[in-house]
Length: 67
Image: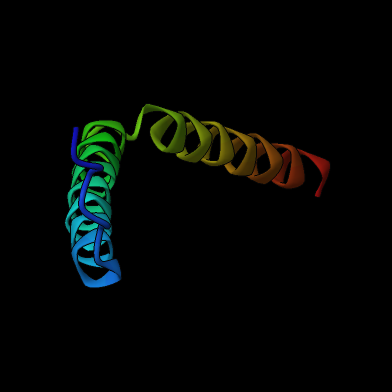
């Protein structure tokens, strides 16, 4: 039985580079998809702006009643 031929470092390095590129592409795609899905809806920002508007209006009406 012949022993297995030695694996050349260049081949291993090339395979590792291909796997790394695939992983980076996958993770980047998942990140981009997630950011697009989450960023599409700004419900919290809308609620904060509405609350700030209500507070500024209530402060303005209180200020006019006091004078």
